[in-house]
Amino acid sequence: MGYAVVHMQKIKAGAVGGIQSHNNREHLPRTNPDVDPLRSWRNYDIIPCDNYKRAIKENLSNLVKSNRAVRKDAVVLCNFVVTSDHETMKAMEPEHQRELFKDSVKWFCDRYGADRVINATVHEDETTSHLHVGIMPITKDGRLSAKAIFTKTEMKAIQTEFARDVGAKYGLERGVEGSERTHLSVARFKEKQALDTYICDRGYELYDETLSDQVKWR
Image 1 (tube, one colour):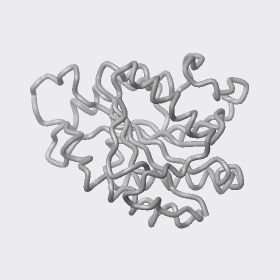
Image 2: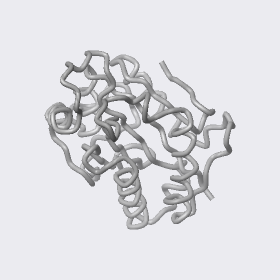
Image 3: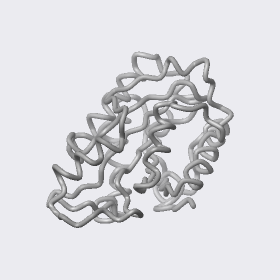
Image 4: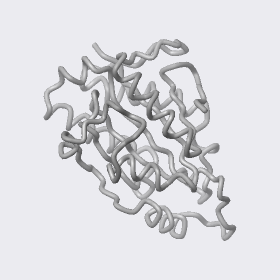
């Protein structure tokens, strides 16, 4: 049995273009040699978005009640990555894998509001298939605040409840709570390191609950 792996990246306003480019493969990746451009045609959208900045601007206008300007260093998007170890994902039938990702998107929409989810993209051109889900951290009372929503308690709850509600259906279990074991294959760890380098250069913050209670990669 494999582990349900969920990462979260906090995307600041100045880095929105970078994560869009990465997710939509608008440019050839320079920091991740495991991306095979010849297989990029296999990537697909569950919730397509070709202009993150516009979608974010619209949500800020429609869902945020404050009239104050958004700070340049404000977190405007939380990019979740959903996957498992390479061996588990490779052994999973393509139809089963697609259903896993579709159920994952529904889970995030139900939990945080479908109107706050601006994109959901599956990458199959890397060593391990994985899903990106972009969520705007807007509270129920109309505040843009990643800190208010994605607390340490909530990040733990995501790991437990996602594994219970979605992962278990596909033979995936929760990682050991508090363990520093990553549950990732060497290949997937390399991919993660490459993405970490990419995001650190552009002001992203990556939280990975599978490593410990809360680890900040910078």
